[in-house]
Length: 453
Image (cartoon, rainbow, N blue to C red; front, side):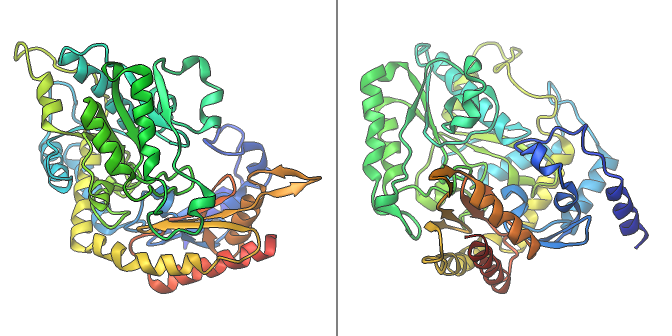
């Protein structure tokens, strides 16, 4: 009680000017910040400094599906800080990071071999892109430098990631910094053909053939890699058409192009399998991961590669550095301890099974919103769903994002913390959610949609 009182008093004196918040409408939020300040979290719930309890509808930011304050993860982190709080990543190692890499490879699709650790999804993506270009150079194909992303793709905020990414606001301010030799596949969303799909849309596999057009334009000998999210999360839960990823894999194989899956959101269970690659039955050459690997407790990311990619670098003198890349905090021991405890919990709690059992529950609940005012589309797969809303209009002019913001704020008043992108409301509830909690989440969303129409 004393701690809670201290938190409330601190919030009353809160000054917000010094903190420049990321991906945030700073001026708008800071007019009334206290409603958005989180004081603590436990299980599937946050509590604000005002004492409002919020169901965590998107697992933090897609990263805390085992619930907040998980005792085994907390204990593992505390033990590790006392045992070995930091270990140099260059020329040195520690036991937990070697065993963690081995463990992640076992979870990955058959045929993967090594893990290079980073500290976030953004770092993991930039690492994968560098490995791709360097790999071709090691093979004597130094002309393969072109990277291909996809429209509406999100691959973090590193220069490499925003270069291959396809979300305009993330790119336009930094256009002078973007990498040269980048191209983009068309996105796979077509409302006329896909609206209100459940799982993978049946239309759209042919869109992968656009890669053949880019090969014809640039020549395969110049293309290093293609990077896509199996399910596009930040763009508003865009699910790949049936057969699309398989077709991308076949075209990449045909032309000697590496295929990278950005699984920062889909990795470690969100789709009911260890990785989206297993859910869709397509094995890429590299997989990037982050978020769920530590249940969001400590930053960690990485890249899983096929042995042939790793082995291409293992040439020359044994005493030479094979890849001039890495981070001060690569394979941090505290992050490794958190990851081991997270993977333990995923196994012990049968998290993948939990997701598979909750998937139809979320699907039924989400699609029950069809016909609600302003709802233009609903889509879902695994334990993730999105509700797309028609934009508000003022004097005939559309005001993108205004409706979703109103829905978001109204839902908070009723105890739900959603995530919105433009006019899309995303849901990715924790794996530990009950059917009742998922049902209530959607009913609160229904009420918020009606109240703000």
